[in-house]
Image (cartoon, rainbow, N blue to C red; front, side):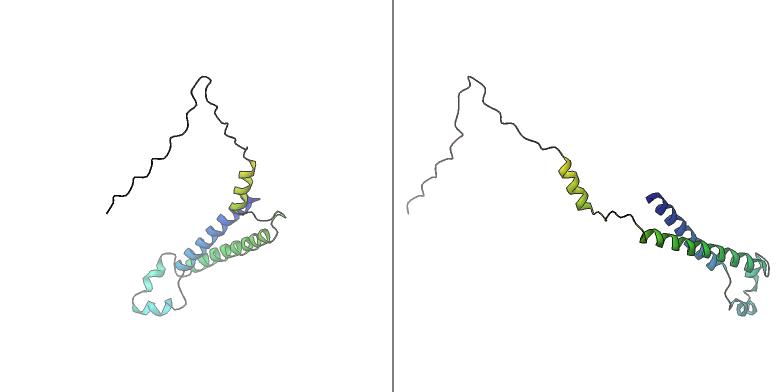
Length: 130
């Protein structure tokens, strides 16, 4: 189920970027006013009306994809599995409990070796008399 959510999220991102690009390519309603000041040549790439219908239809298609995809992602988010959310701390605690217990064996002194006491702390030095 996780792969489905990832795929839908990638489609959502692609649709959003496509909508942004298509809206930026379209001419605004006030673009006709600029035609009188020399900006009229900008509409000749797609023709006088051809770009408007093609770009607006493509925008409508990507907007529909975006909306349907949003609904599906919302449905998947609302109907998650019955298993509660787990945090990293929960997973670390589970991993720690699954590790085998490690005991450090004590090393006995070899037979025949003399038993020596740990070195004593050095005696404090007396303070010089004043």
